[in-house]
Structures are given as structure tokens and as C-alpha cells.
Length: 442
Image (cartoon, rainbow, N blue to C red):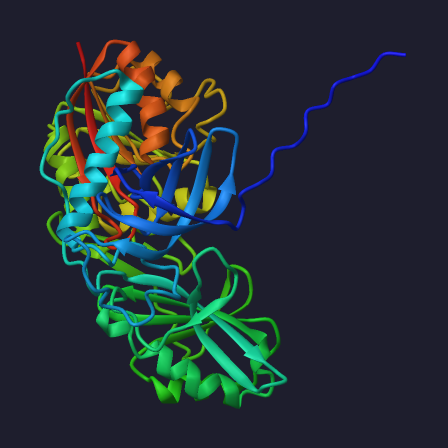
């Protein structure tokens, strides 16, 4: 009989509290330490600090943990400005000044990209940033009504949890949207079925507050008007089914935002993706135009074009712009936005850019310049096919440094050079840093 050796499972450290000395930060602004031959990534910690941390993940070669108590504090640590900071999961980095947040986030991305791309230096340009308070023009606010206690919780999800943290105001939400918290607390408990309201979407469309109430049970006209009467300056919509919006004021006006520097207006639906930071989005579009410098001789391809945020701005100066987007709904919206702005030299197509592109009117080597702005998954598959078009310049806008590094490696291997790189602080007080990178063919 053969006797098989089975190694004993090593005891997990999950939930244990351990002391850690923090050496540095990674690109997601987690503290980096060592613990018993393992690297440890620690949320809520700063370089030079000693912390007591609870282990949240225990893998073969690394640990993840969250700071419970700071034993030796960095001089850079500041008092969070939000009273909900320890409970709400929306802002992770309020214990740093906004300036220090940007510095550490860029340093973390620098280390990641140099390691992944085999580069010694990076061509950093000034970071795109704006106000770190009242910047957010769109947010989803959760509601939970406890029928036993007859108590309503309004707020945002707690860090690492599905539970809601009670919030009465939010300093990163645009100022015109602040009345939403008091309005929901006042009206929802008076509904016949308050538990039927699951969340509220707030949007600042130019200067107009818009509220979408998601409800899973029918509301009477009187209940709808109760919301309107408490906050009459807002435009109110009900969403009884996903994606189906009903105006509660019989004034179904299109939602719109403006790119003032380009003189462009873009209409959108309440469930469309838009960049939530108004001022940084304007900086992003303006820098894209400046870096690509479109001329009357340029034909430009915009991949992952959405509803035309970049395409229309580029079309102001280019000979022709082709925008390609995966969602047919967004293609239609982008086409309507081109008509709204009286731009005849921009056309949009629908295609899943991660699949083989095949024969299409837009898939031809006619482009001098390309812009791509993919989701967090990056442009895997698309970036390889893009090489066949042989554009002279590629402008990559990324919301995930890790997938950007993967895709940039493909471009560098194909002979492109990384000419310019800038961080984009779209979400102050979070670990999130977006990137804009300009590649040129040698």
C-alpha cells in the first residue's frame, strides 16, 4: 500500500492583529511592510509609521491588512475633515493633505510602471487636478429602512461592507446636491412603503440638480410630489424599472453638461457614464486636444468613445473623427451630440473592441492619431489590433495603472515611445489615480 504524504495546512493569520513598520506606499496608496518573510499591504498606513493592523487576507507570498491603531505617527498625517471618515467607504486618504495624496499616488504609479515597463525614468508632466472639495457631480446614495425599528439610514457603503454608513452631508459632493440627504430623511419615512426606495442617484447637469429615485413598489402621485415639494429646485425622476425614467414634474428635459473651453454641449441619460469630476474632465479634454494637436489634415480614431466626450472636442479642429464604442445606446447618444453641436466631420460606430475587429468602414489604416479611453479592464486585444493601423501618435487615457502598464508594454514592444505622461487626480481623497499618456512611433 502506497502511503501519500499530505502537508499540513498552515494556520491562517486571518483576523489576527500584528504590528508592522511601514516602509513605503504602493500604487493604490497601501502601506508596504514585511512580516515573517511575506510582503504586507496595509490600508490606512503611511511611510515611517508603526501600526497595529488586522489581517484581512493571507496568501502564500503576501498579506493584506487594515490599520486599527497608529502606534508611531507620521508627521504627514492630518485630521480627516469628514466626521464620517472612519465609517464611510467613499474616501480612503483623508488622513493626508490633498497635495501629499497626489505626491504619494504618483510615486506609487512611478514604481509600478518603471518595474513593469523596464524604464528608468518616466516623462512626467504636471498632474491634472482641481478642487478637492465639492467636486463630484454624480453619486449614488443608498437607503435602508428598518421596518422593525422604523428607522431610515441614508448614506454610503462602509469600507469593505454592504452595510450603509449614515451620512448627513458629504464634502466631496457638489454643493448644489447637498439637500439630498435631508430631503430623503424627511420624505421617505412618510411613504406607505418606505422600504421600497433602495437608492437615489444625484446628478448635477450643468447647474441643475437632478434626482433619480429607484423604487421597487409603485408610488402614488401624492408621494412623488412630496419629494418635489421639499426640494422644488431639483428635477425629480422615478426609476421603477432599471433604465426607465419617469419625470415627476412633467418636464422631461434632456440632461446636459458643457465643455466650456471647446464650446461643446453633451446630452446624456441618467444612467449613462459621465466623468463625475466636472473641472478635471474639462482639464482632461483640453489636454487631450493640446497633446494630439489636431489639424485640418488629421483623421483621428477615438476608441471607447462613449457619448463623444473626446471625439467632439477633437472634431473641432480635425479633418475627420471616427468614434467607436461598445454600447449601441452610447453610439446613438454620441451621434445625437454631434448633431446638437453641428459637427458634420465626426461619425460613430458600435463594435466590441476586445473581439476581432474584422472589416468595417472605420477599421482602415487612415489615421494619423488615435485616442483610446478604456474601462478599468484596459484595452487588451484592442491595443494589438490598433497596431495594424500604424498611427503616428496614440493617446491613452487610463483609469487603471495596472492594465495601462500591460497595454503600454505592447506599444513599446511595437516601437512606440512614451513621449508624455501625466497623472489625473479625478477622485481626490481616494487611492485612485488616472493617467494620460502620449505614445509616438519611432
